[in-house]
Length: 316
Image (cartoon, rainbow, N blue to C red; front, side):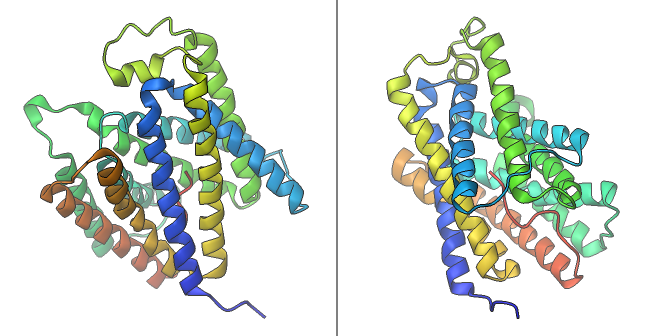
């Protein structure tokens, strides 16, 4: 007999998870001038990996390290790693609200990739929703064609890489369980970060005055006593966030829980205002409304048609 859904508890958990994700983003924004990008990525992921292993040990669950899809897993890990590199970079010059709003263009990319690689059928109404969603992205970006700063596209690049990673996850999930796939992501991220340390960790290429490029190329461990407590905190916050999200989907209806994932944008607006005095423009609010509306419509259409969506959970 199946356990009845506890939707109020699920909603509370997903709201908590999204709030914690936003706090993690704010920590990155707060310390980026005192750490290097891949130092931060390394420390955060190492902390999350340790917590994953401890969790599996406490719950007596076996970790299967081997993957049934080595090539696809490598592609998924690389896309995920560089996707969120783009996102973390965007936080150095963009508000939390704008970065997260643009990240939520990922469902539109996922829909397109599902058509190409998974053979999903998409009707005219869903295509219109995808178009409306990208119009929302355009409005949020507010591009000046002649003087457009292409760095603004970093969260969109993250959304595309994330969509590719999650499309691959749809395939690899047939034989690899969720903990194995998380382990692969963590080990891959740590390995790639170490490669960046070997080739750029001494700051030998950091000849830029721009804070964003300094963040990317800064020497590692220049201020560890200040930066690393925050970096370790990010790992803990991310782990608790994942626990909240996975718990929400386990106790409540996914079709209810998923709609509250968009609360991440609301949390980003609130935390961005409180900590960084970021006030979104009316144009940003309009774009966000279109992105959320189109994303919710796409999700509901997939549920109505009884199709499996590529992912129910943002895996950050």
